[in-house]
Length: 410
Image: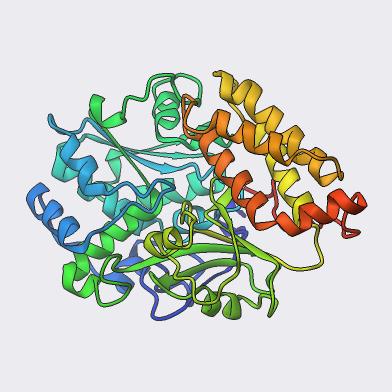
């Protein structure tokens, strides 16, 4: 009988440098318990003091969109944890890294989550996902483990904003998968939420120790990270890189054009950037270039597509993905999308777009308006020459090829 686990994942996975998170996947589609132990070895025991010491020494940042340090979340649990939540919803439509881990090496993720549960006294590890394939993989992994009885897998509603940590907790508690109006962190109620890759990185850190963990990466950002690379590349997929790897090396390995038109880094709450080969991929390096590393996504646009049309398509999608719970989302994002669509059609709307972006930035009940504003304003700054061409001639003559996708297989 064929199960969902037999179906291939929707991306390839490869590495630049020696694999860590992706170790063993060159030999197997998925690592079961025996293959996982043969690849990574047993997980050493740990308590909260050791956990915090390792996290501090390794300066492990969260691998979710916000990059919030796991150690800071642990310290915010003043009364311990009642629940550890693995946020595997991955609502960013261009990201595949967390699903790759859940579907192909789920034990590494569970190692990290269960280590945190043990250290904090939490009785449950809740794994939240949007897709049945990831859910089935985690259920199968939990059934293979003696500590798997603590693991509960939850299918939550899809949607861009439903992947926000407070939305995930709200869904697990029986409510809608939408961010609540108040910005109270989940740790305030004894729930620790972190994303899939963060827990997998913790499992590596516990095995390697801080010194070996820092053998790769940079001084400020030790270790590796997973990128989802797509758009105009010959080799799309999930790639593990040492943090600080130059963009040019990643683009060459992925088969990108020699002269790309632009890159979008960080997903659709990220930034449009010039494709500078020397740009160092990581939170520090991307921030120095004026962007945000975000969800670890690199999307390449070549000269064949209308980049302004791509921007308009994604902006319209972001407006439609709004929770509609507050004014900046209900009115500001739809106005912003109309501005960018008008500009792509050759009508003057640059000033209006920047004005609407300023209006929504920092004023929503969640980070969605701010992320959308960053995506649009960075795109308009980078594409100024193309916008001038659209205004002068009513367009650029190039089609919109969908190199920035807004849907696809989950």
